[in-house]
Image (tube, rainbow, N blue to C red; front, side, top):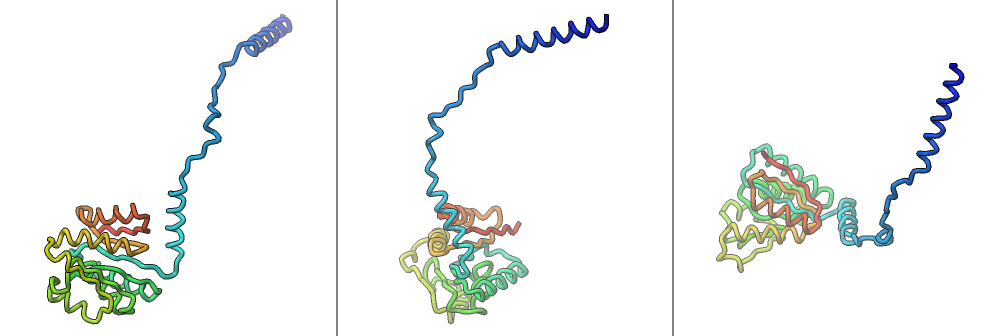
Length: 202
């Protein structure tokens, strides 16, 4: 009885398997028409290759800009960083500033090599505060913009930041999350495929 049951069970299982195999399987349509098409992302590849080449360069044009409201400790860090970058052969591009990021970058570059410092002013030297004018004494490479003399400092600074970024290969920016002008500068640098390093102060 047990053997007969086992035999019948095996026959039923075999029949079920055969029936299952005979059922039509749902077909899966795979679109092959687009397989030969390759999207042209050459511009993205070129941008990445350019950024990689910039990173590998031993000497670069590095822009350093940022907030004016910095603690003494942050200013000392930026000054030390800038000195080190110049000693490695890099050229520093920044703007004038009586305090904060730009002033610290200027001090750091002057310590290492004044010839490796380029300052682009939003307007003219005469429109800078007296302490900024004093700091710029001895800097051999200063670009002024008398054509912006009638602009507000905010508008002139926005244009100045773009000019600085256009001339650099890498941007280092120190800012807070509420620094709207500096955020726009960072966005411009990223759109221009610059290597961007951002340090948030808050």
